[in-house]
Image: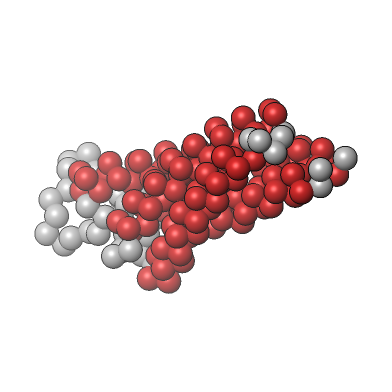
Length: 159
């Protein structure tokens, strides 16, 4: 009975995590595209386009490239974790738990890795608001993904 009480908690966390991973993927994709075109770090000799807007120009540091790369990997694996989690939530049985839990743990470890790089970026400084948003989302995701893992395991151990 207690396992059934954790099902709505796990469902809510699953939906929240999926939405947050999608947002991180969108911002990370934008940052990667912009880095391919202009680079992460402003060079004083850089020739800016005539339609340049200083608000949209990303300012990064030495950790930005690594941070964006690992954030994108974590967001794709996290979205895959949500898809496996949907299958587990629908059946809510011990047979579907191992696949959902294993991919959720992999997504969480990659998210924690990206969170560590986010902390390094915060420590170095010099970044724009979009990167700050992505850092905040990854820090929050590292906690909510762990709570989701605990919720699906707690639901299965009570049977």
